[in-house]
Length: 181
Image 1 (cartoon, rainbow, N blue to C red):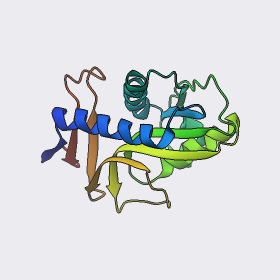
Image 2 (image 1 turned 180 degrees about the vertical axis):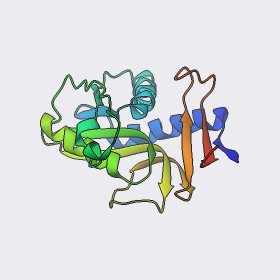
Image 3 (image 1 turned 90 degrees about the vertical axis):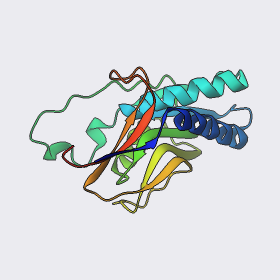
Image 4 (image 1 turned 90 degrees about the horizontal axis):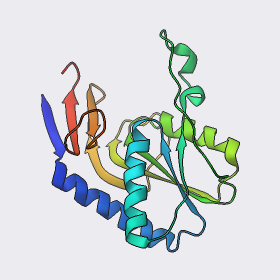
């Protein structure tokens, strides 16, 4: 069984709401950066980044963080994994970091991203933005500051975030899917 939990129109409205919340909290963005977690968090982060810049007319530093070798299950996989590029043309030292991912599930990806960020300095503050917060599934005590939608789900379900123009998706949409479908 599949259920749409955010359709295209609601997805667009949610993006705008999240951006307005960030703008309220970061003001002139003089000390702020946006970092997307590879891979799917980058696509969402690019959308957030562009929307904020369109609204504020401010240039905001943008980076992409690959977490492949910071994951705690890195050596547990049987198949080889392919890393993505980390593109961080700035240091995070004393910056207000907005870390972006599509889904917050166990918290392990966010922990890995924070470990990876340490190579780029010590941020003043790290905030987390996620499109979907899968409540009640954390392995680690991590919570998001900006949440598109909180979803009650069980571990046998998965959440699929489709972004227009990414992997052939024609519209933005979020699905709750029972495992095996």
